[in-house]
Length: 421
Image 1 (cartoon, rainbow, N blue to C red):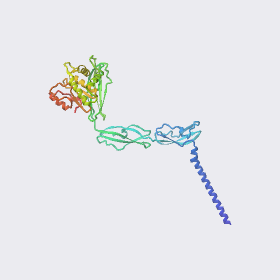
Image 2 (cartoon, helix red, strand yellow):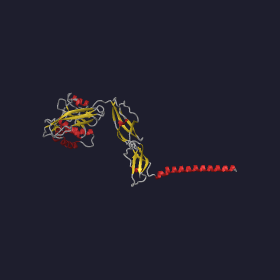
Image 3 (cartoon, rainbow, N blue to C red):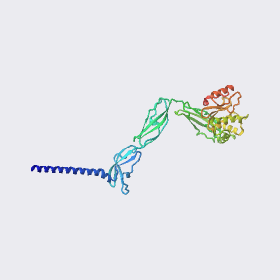
Image 4 (cartoon, helix red, strand yellow):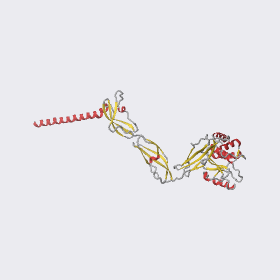
């Protein structure tokens, strides 16, 4: 009997312990439910707001789960202050809403890849500082810091051109590749400027100062020529400086300053503005649009040979525009007149051209570049000893013609003109 009571007492004791544990577990579960389920639902403030890197601020209203214009909302940053908007990360903030404070966070993220363009570079062999990956990058745009590395390191000891691929990675891990061209050269030779010489014009007779100028570089096929004529006043007599500057792709530069003399205006002076329309009208009778560059050049050459008659009246060697216009009006002149007319036609057709003078005499011809190199053309040839037409000839071919005419018919200062090879 005593044993049975003892068993019942122990059983009741175990039941009470089990009930207590169950009660505690239920309380814990209810608490967890309230904290992790119910409270987040009824909490009026979001736990976090995510903004893209590069933002300058975050709207406090973004933390509200439901818009409530009647109750103010305010952000209070901790002692570290506002987020670094261009640095991805997690930033704590206190949101004060309806006089109640809530802990929250601002997440700054970077999801946008960098945007950039490749930048071609020329590197001079053996120079001290080699280009860095970022040197090949232009117009870089990204909200965060960007690191640049070569996809494959270029060979700065191999002369020539090579493709360089640069990998750009921002702080968000977004990647972009840009491609550029590296030119490795040992070029230290500046361009050569041909045709830069003192000139003469007259009051009101504006002349193009870049015509008859050629720039040749030993490696760069297209060196840049600039003409500084800012000091020139064509309306006032005087002597003015004109500076020609040529720069190649490596940065080598040549600069030449000459003088432009603006003299008394002559009644017979012809401005380039008056000459060009007359030349265009004449060209419309000589060439057609479907002609090649060489065909246009030959058509002008043959027209000059057939239509410009030799005249005993001397040409005005100080005014090529006047002599070019003389052909249109009178169809007569000397070799300077023919050369001036051919020069005007080539310029209007978009070709490079230089008027050349026989050294020590008064014979003139042209050096024209149709896009494939310089060649000699003589529209005013009068020597009967020359058997072939002087049309698009190289220096060597011209020398052979000169030999036929006595050896010095086409002698000239080769340093003043680009080579015709």
